[in-house]
Every structure is written in C-alpha cells, then in structure tokens.
Length: 260
Image (cartoon, rainbow, N blue to C red):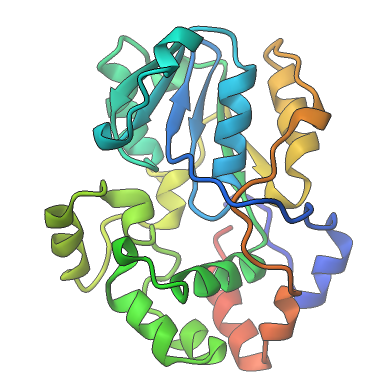
C-alpha cells in the first residue's frame, strides 16, 4: 500500500544508516498548524519529529495531548494545547482538527513517519521489555515471556496500534480497560490509510533518513528548517536489529507487514 517494505531482510543494507543514538526524552503529542497535520505513528521517530516541529513550525501551532501533561509555558511560545491522545490515527485526526475548523483533506501536507518493519518490531519488543506500567497487557506479557522469534510468530496484533501509544491517555481506568481487551482498537495501517488507501496529501518520511526527508517535506510547503537542529530523542537500542532474526521470525514479520 505504501510501497516502502523491502524483502529479504538483507535489503536493509540498501537503506540509509539509522540515525545516531541520543538521550531519552518524553514528548507525547500530536501536532498541526495551518500548513500541516503530523500523524504520530508509534516507534517511528515521532517524539523526535514532534520536538522539531514545535520549534520549527510557524505560529500558531496546535498541540493535542493528554491534559495531565499540559505545560503552562507553551502558550507563551505560540503553542495552543488541546485535549487529545499521545498518538492518533488519521481517522481520529480528522475528528480532532474538525473541532477547530480544519479539514484533513485540505491541509497542504499530512505528514507521517515510517520505519523498516524488521527494525520496528525489534524496537517494539525491546520497549515492551522495559516494563512500563502504561504498556501492561497481553503484548507486554508476551514480550517478557518469549524470545524475539516467539514474539514475532505468536503476536496476533498484526501490526496493531500498540496499546497506550495510540488508543489511551495516562489515566488508570482507561489503561485497565484497554489491557483487558484481547486486541487493541486500531491497526498500524489506520495511521496511514483508514479508508484503504492513503490520502493524496499524505507524505511519509522514513525513520532511516528522517531528518533529511522531513526537511524536504517541510520545504514542499514553504517551511525552512535546519538538519543541524534535529533532536534525536528517546532512542533505547544500540544493537543491530538483524541480530534478533531467525528465518522463522523474518517470515512472520514479512507477512505481518506485507501491506507496507
């Protein structure tokens, strides 16, 4: 659907090298302005992109995130906070921006990030094994009890939205309700094409070349940025994702993400 997935696994050598590791940072937000709507796809560099967009976009900028993490200093920077989730699918984004008089189909640019699915699944596995309480649920239990191969083969989400990253806020009641469900509400593909095909104004930038492709996307709508200012944040792994793979795990991930 997106035409971004390569096979076999060694096709990763044809991709750009992954960006350097950086310090942890927590910026859970969904961002839009008159120029663009950013779709925060979990584990694809969304936090880094959010931080950069907040510093770069012309004002005013709308920041949609849980009310309990609102920051009183942001309005002074021309950033208007609205109640929302840490990540929202494209369908959810339509509803949010409509409340403020915007139409997703009329944005000059709808921006989303993507990541090599082989790397993406390893990143998700490693993240779940950190043990964050807000990620509690069947997928986290599977990550703790399984090797990566078992995780790749047994995980039945099929590219799902990954728990609280996409469908909940931080409140304990919502977390408990979501954790009790056998599957989460949205699929990863819903971040790009909830109606079956991507919208004409969607531009997907790759995690593997994020800074350069993001700058090019912004430039296409008349916004100039600087690659030197791009903040690499919240990276937690330094190892090569290929080391996690067996032929069985590779086959499982290929079929799960064949739509990409």
